[in-house]
Image 1 (cartoon, rainbow, N blue to C red):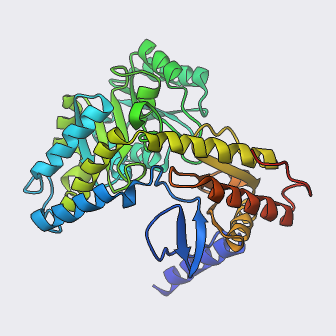
Image 2 (image 1 turned 180 degrees about the vertical axis):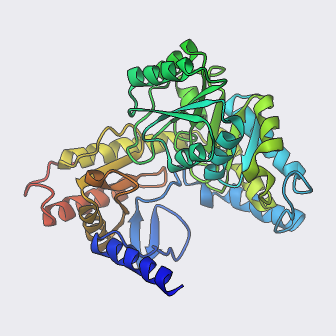
Image 3 (image 1 turned 120 degrees about the vertical axis):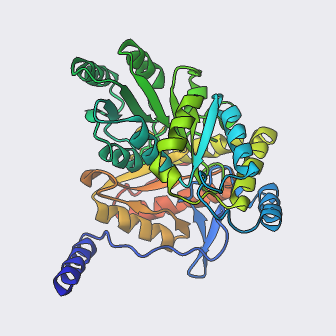
Length: 402
């Protein structure tokens, strides 16, 4: 035990030396456009709460009412005694929202990816995956015995080549998997071209739309709706923890996929179902999405304003096309230094480094929400300008923001 503990401490020391050992940021109140950390009010650019639904009165009221009526927990896994009418109602609503025949909820988006990949794919099969797919997809693929083919990020020609290689190897099922919106860079998968190549290779397509649902498409229906690809994507994975504002993940697709997951997905089979309050709040969130489209509109107005401001200052924002806007500065230590400088100036924006991103692509990832005001975004841009100049990341004169 002593040797093991010593090696763990040595690993922590190495992280500390690289500037990657960071304490948890503890919020002293609700997740919002501004948050309190260590007694200070900070503009929050680190939240996935895209539409500000987590504090919406309808969601809060639904959660409270469900807890009083149904209790604090469900008390069992779904396949034994943990399926309540609330769970089935949410899944019907999710299927209608995503335009699919059926849906199935999981404890998280991470569990959903592990669950679907581990169930749909076996040793005779193949998976073709974008190299920058989310860690949950990568881990899900590792848990299967399927042959693995990785294509360069958003490279449709390389994707086509990998699909052809999978077919030449005589695999039973070929599943092409991609994020809809990539969480670190904020770019969107070229889904129309990817689906076209997959169809030509007689492969199925799975899209993880964690950062697309609630953000892209009509009423936030996601990237499949955004590109009008209904009926051409076999499986859509989403999360209830980001734009929906609550907790959980889901898989939407044909009824056959749902039934296979119910009977064979280990994360589904061996996890207690969502508490009633969570389920009721998710149902309420879907109703709010339909009733308040202005939230999505405000999200995009804010995203465009802030992105143009950062680019005008001279920051490298990569190829972002969504409210996720990275500020790429190089190695992890520089990213953490920028995050610290921003916090000193009243902005909470977390630094991200290796292994989440490449060693030379460390960044501060920013996410604006529908809840930010123009004044808050302008203050955040002023903080970026000041911090960037102080750290030598920008020239002495900043371009005026939009």
